Length: 135
Image (cartoon, rainbow, N blue to C red; front, side, top):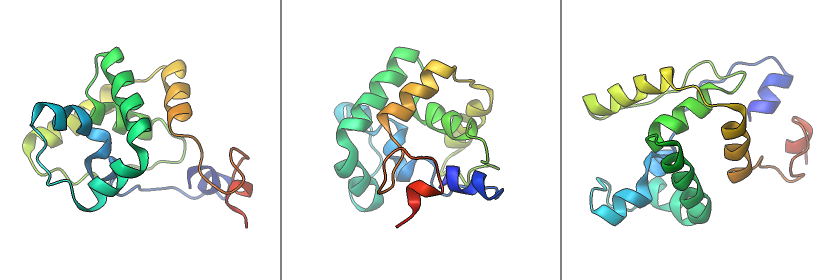
């Protein structure tokens, strides 16, 4: 959506930027028993569809020494055209973490690796938008 929005000069306010918690370190939380979700709904569907990518993402975050949720929000905020995400924290710790993402600056290599892990969607692969979203 972002490339298409940029092409048309439209700002984006993303909802659920961590995909219902999937980008919050969910695999580690499952392993250590600290997951606070039941494993159903958007969280479970997102994880089932992208488990390998999520595992790569969590490894990258660990290699960076950063919290996955902070990296996910910082990655989103680094995207040209993003006005600001709708975060919906449930606790003060979630809010504090989201604020940490404002200070986290990801280098070009890390941004490129994130784009590799989660490639552009669309029927035409990595063509620039809006063409990537054309029928």
